[in-house]
Amino acid sequence: MIDRGGVNLTEDKGKYNTGIPVEIPTDREEQETAIKEWAEGNIHLEEALRQCIEHGIKTEASCAGHKDANNDPYLSIEITDENRERLFNILQNVFKKRSGINGIDIRNHIERGKPKAELSIHAKPRQKNEIFDLIAEGAKGKIDLEACHPIIQKMMKIEERARQLKLYSHSFGVRSLGPANAVVLLNNTIKMNPQIYNNTRNSINPYVTDSQIIHKLETIVEAMDGRTHQTTSKKGLFERARQSIIERLERDLSLPDSYADLTTLSDKAREEAFIKFGEGNRGLTRFLRTAYEHGAPSMFCCEGHGLRNSYAMLRVTDENLELLQTLGKALSNHGIATDFEDNFQYGRRVTFRSTGELSRNNWFDLASDIMENPERYDSSSPSILYHETEIHTYMPRSYAIKKRLLELLKPKETKLLTEGTNPHPVEKQSVGHSWDLTPEERARANDRSFMQIQDTHQEQREENHERLD
Image (cartoon, rainbow, N blue to C red; front, side):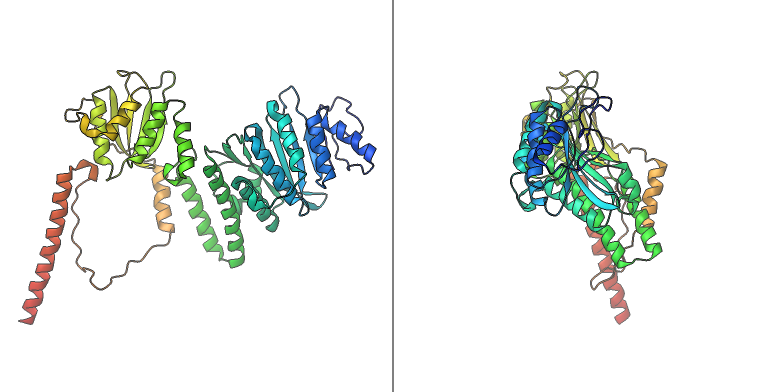
């Protein structure tokens, strides 16, 4: 069965291209007539339709693309147990021309009282012919899902779980696969299946690398598996409500989807991210890479556009603090401002930003050189552009309330006293944050804590001795 897709309804396109789903003709001549009408004059789409039909793949809808706002060349195919291996081969074949894919969608729904699953491959208008050719070639062969690209594997896993859970209002897809930059979970899907997707912030989630796309698809699979476990375990109403609230709060308190944690990426994906975030500036790409190699992964950055100065924001830890302080002090003498911050959501971080005194984006190589050879640069007399004072970002009241509520709802970990545990803990001294202290001050603080512990043990020994007397 196939319908017209994006054809102008005011034009007469033939008896098969009517916009109404019709059965694929069994007569060979009539079938060729239908294929030509559905292909709308595009011989590449025509061959894709022909090969699909000849190899038992039922096409659902198609469009050759049109020179208007609805220019969306695509081909939709029904997913069945009999044609899965051929569909896998089609998808794997299409991935050879990823830059030509505008999107891949999978939909589970009910048609005429029966469940149905569809796969739609959308091509970019200028590369549609190549995509249609790859579909035609892919329809001729079969492969196992394990031989497919990981993105394909995860997408088909989601479709499989949707069938098992009998989700018949379920649509999702990936967009702009050259490389992929979004996972789309349609709002209707979220609305119809809230018990599964209550962790989804919105319908479109932008990403940069394949590993991020795969991770997002995995979270969808995990959410579906979690629903299955929850159903079979028959948790109480109160427990389900509590868990639902916890998941909602964790979603609201989580970092925005636009933030990419470099530490979670593979080496290859991380290198791709360095290049992507560098925005064509080799100096920025080098600095992001150098900072990561020195234990200071970047969080946000900008090469500089229009009136916006270039900047790079790095994560601060006890281990990299001294290096970042040295870097900031040295850069301050070259027109680069340094600001440390303790952000309520992102944690400790430092921003290096051009003030315009140095050319707006050629300081990244200098920053890399300082990180690699700090001993060669003077950091003893920083300028007023260096700000080491810790800045606390204001925490919105709503965020603070949600955070406190999450702490109350989550199960508490009970710490048990074991043998050797001191029943009289040493009172903690208020020494501020570690980045407020020099290495010498931290060492002295540790020495004081050690001495206090020794004094406490001595007092206990003396008390025990008096009891014995």
